[in-house]
View (tube, rainbow, N blue to C red):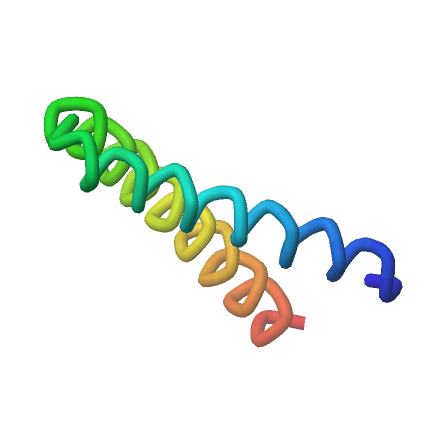
Length: 60
């Protein structure tokens, strides 16, 4: 990754923090719950992809 890619990730993380903060402030817990569930699914998928990649490297 190049520096600009990391900057986009940092900016997205900042926007996500603000979004979560706004949801908590407005007590929009239903939307917050959906967001957490979607994030958990995404993280699980990424961890599985990473584990497959590591296993494939070990097989070689």
